[in-house]
Amino acid sequence: MKKKIGRIFVFLIFITTVFSVSGNAINKEPSPMIFNGTLSGYVNDTSMNPIDGALVRVHFHGTYEENYTNSLGYYHVTNIPMCNCLKNCTASKPGYSTKWVLLAIVENTLYDFQLSTGNVLYVGGSGLGNYTSIQEAIDDSLSGDTIFVFDDSAPYYENIEINKPINLIGEDKNTTIIDGKSKDIVVFIHANGVVISGFTIRNSNDACMFIRRASNTFIRNNIIFQGNITGKSKGIEVTFNSSFNNISGNEIYGFYDGIVISLSNNNMIYRNNIHHNFYGVSIFSDSNKIICNQVNFNKHRGVSIAQGRTNLIAENTVTNNGFEEYTLGGIWLGSNMIKDGNNYIKNNQISHNNGTGIYISPTFMGSLMRYVITNNNISNNKLYGIYSDMGYRTFITRNNLIDNPTNAYFGSWYMVRKNAIWFNNYWSDYSGENFYKIHGKFYILFIFSLPWFCVDWHPAQKPYDIP
View 1: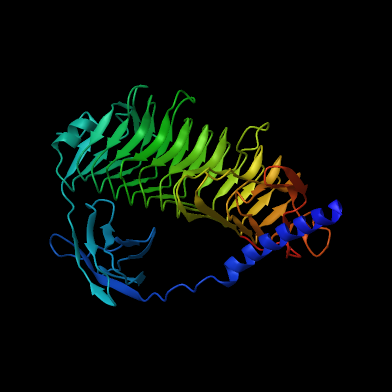
View 2: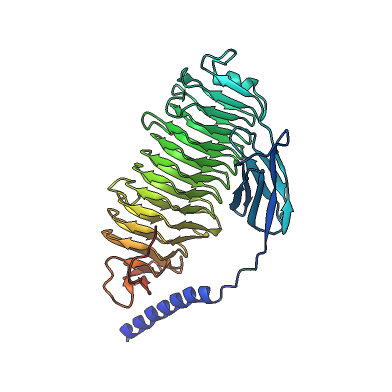
């Protein structure tokens, strides 16, 4: 009789879980229809000459649309949702001062930008009147000016502060060096619309680049490094309400934190090479994007979302990160205290990490944070492909899990956290049954566990093509 009651109890738990999952899918209300508008116009200089190749970008809802101007200075940005909010619209080009404006986008919105070139100030070299220090040139510059720094007087042993929208351009990123002498911040930015490109920036005891209460800055095509990992050094730190900043094309290595973003939303980390740090990229904010980066050989973990919602980790190569003895390694999804929201991990190549490809931490009690993990190649990691430790409503679908010693491990507490949902993944050790059994334990009311309870009900028969 006791055995019969026990079977009925387990069956009821199974039915409750399945209907909870299927009910969420079936009863989900359709998304409201969104109508899109456009933004068009011209980008000219102060003499009303057209600017070819200027980038016009419209930010909204944690993403953006963009378009470059043609030879007439004309641009046309499409697919902008029309809703009751103002959009942050920017026009920029190296050598010009970045302009931004808040606009209400309707079906055919028109707006013309005018960019000023300002003066060009020169640092180093042998020109008459050239400055000998970068900070001196910054202090004498006006908004919109360009400061061009020659490499033949490098290295420049300075700790500089930028408090106005200027373009700071180095002659050659390999040889135009700003050295912080292992003290303080090397480059401190607290102004909107700053462009920094073409430098080697090195040797701080804090952050090599510190962006505070600054938006629409462009940090691109630089080499940022520390001789060795010391203390809490950071390559780039973005903090205190700094938004719509673009960090792209940089090489960042030798820091405790390669890039860290905190209390700052809507920033883009794009096409950087982030390697040989303790932590690669760490996010503590909302609506940031980590896209198309190489994140390799970082000592503890490659990419982390510790806090925040609607962040996107997409199209990155995340390899050879982490200690072998730890379950961490490639991508770590933290115990988020945010009450509700989604983070997205998709189209990444996650392989050969010395631990786990993707590690999902226990979700903070009371949080409704969800992670959507889809279309990733997760292969040849030394311990696990995915390790899910009691994540709440994590959706794991259409991934390739190939040749990890344990392709996935799952643990959950029933009635404390709803299950992760595994669906349509490809498993290299799939035996051809109707479902794939995932390693792990499913705990009932903290009392006893059921091994092999979590399953992928519809495993894919062949790997997905994920370029």
